[in-house]
Image 1 (spheres, rainbow, N blue to C red):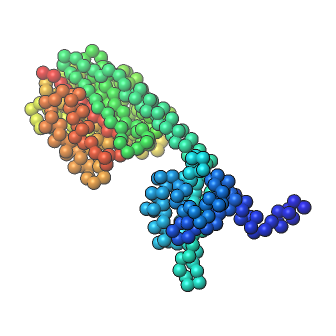
Image 2 (cartoon, helix red, strand yellow):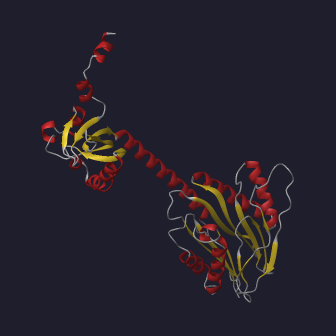
Image 3 (cartoon, one colour):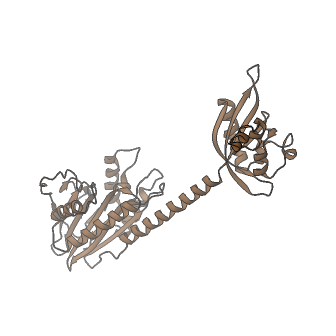
Length: 379
């Protein structure tokens, strides 16, 4: 009880001097008029070194002074107050103290601003938390990138009759990896499987789902399932393991001997087919809904499948929406441009074609990973 009475008997001056935050009053040009003991302790500067001799902005770091001049002071003049401005105060020993600053203008009897009152809060713990959070996010991104890259690695099919190549480029303006993936593999001595998919979401979860679906696709393809049947099996796999909902996939199979191409598309953008004797065009057949879409316990309808025969010199391109999707244009316009680019560069080897397409569509506005998987049937 005595302790409580002693605390309650503290004077306003004592409360001011020993407050858990720094207090200072300045003139309108920032010249310090008054500080409390807390501010002295934090800065390592005595009151005699501050009052009437230093401006508040002079105690800030170089970047802080610029921010004070260009943002802090103008906002204070316009609004009469500023809240939670993050700055750094340079202490007497040269070290820096992260702080959050609140300021308000004090008006006189004539309702004109006379001085500025400022409270300064130590933000060291907050800064350490933010830095640790950034380190944690960086570690998560690195793990996701390693997982993603491990899923995209591997030698692509190549023979005297067929050549496959891919280019992949992460989004330029995001800290998270996406769920785009591609794969190509020999199903038998004369049959090639190709797949491109896009998992909903970003980060480790999307990369892990991508890995599961990629592995499942390879395993199911090895059983001899045709493209439509493989997508139906992926539906069942996703429902059983609760992964891949709304994932888009295009899977195709090429018989090198007969040159028959079979493909099925689960909600994914249509492949570009550039037959040797025809202009390049989008393959709109064999389309159905994304994986898991509309699964409400009822028996799913059979997925459709498309077929065509390629001639030597034909080119096939699979891709993800990050290659062609832009905010300032329709998706149709992006796909039309892609068809034109494939037509104009169809004579390039698959590796050069895929790389050329990524360069042609490169832009700062792209917000998603971009992938291009090209196959060429040699003469």
